[in-house]
Amino acid sequence: MQLAAVPPQVPQPHPAQPPQLAPNHQAPHGGYVSPIPVRPTHLGHALAAEWTKIRSVRSTMWTLGVLVVLILGIGLLTATALSGHDVNPRIAFGFFGVMLGTLCIIPLGVLVIAAEYGTGMIRTTMTACPSRARVLAAKAIVFFLLAFVITTLAATLVALAMSGMVGGREPTVDEWLRATVGTGLYVSLLGLLALAIGSLLRHSAGAISAMFGVVLLPMLLAVFMLGASSLQWLTKGLINYSVPNSLATLYGIPFLPDGSGPEGWTPLWILTAVAGVALGAAFLVQERRDV
Image (tube, rainbow, N blue to C red; front, side, top):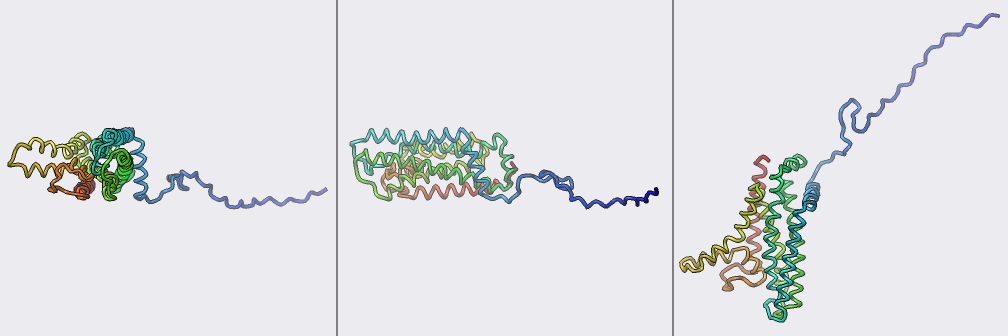
């Protein structure tokens, strides 16, 4: 029996295999591709980062907590002590608690930026966000809004308590606004000035000392010069443009009620100009100095 010859098997070409996909952290040719989506950053990201930092630091909660306790506690104690007495306007003496509260907002404004320079964390911040102007702007916005909301709410509660417990003339709408919104703006701008000084000096203790000097020194110098008749013009100027008198003016009870100093909303506009100049200098220096 004769077997039929079997033709040799010709190997069939295999279909081309598609290239295997590399894992999401490796490029097809061995390069690295981050699994984190890359997208352009903007001010919103910096604001979110600064909000996370400012609310996660213990000093923020303690400082703002003491601020609220001082404004509410001293305001309510004053309202209780003056209950049944006439004050014009009724809400005037809410000034005392707010004045002491400024001693809390100043250190917080300095620490918002100077603390990062002291610990060296500012290098990490600048690496994550190379735009220095954006970093400073985000810090200023977050701090200003937080201080404004807290101070305004506390001042409003004190004003409402005084209006209900103290006798005297009913405050006008303008007086209500100055004692609540105006006070919140003034204290927040004072904290913003402290932030600018902290950015310029980059030293927490030095910046806090400088700001306390701005707040307290004019009034102390005026007290020491009260007996010098030849310096009465300087004494009046130091009193009229000091921070304590500016706050008292917003409440309608200036220290020198002779009309020689700023009245109404004028102290707020003066502080706005001063804080704007200091913040502008901080932006300018921030762009030119290394970290």
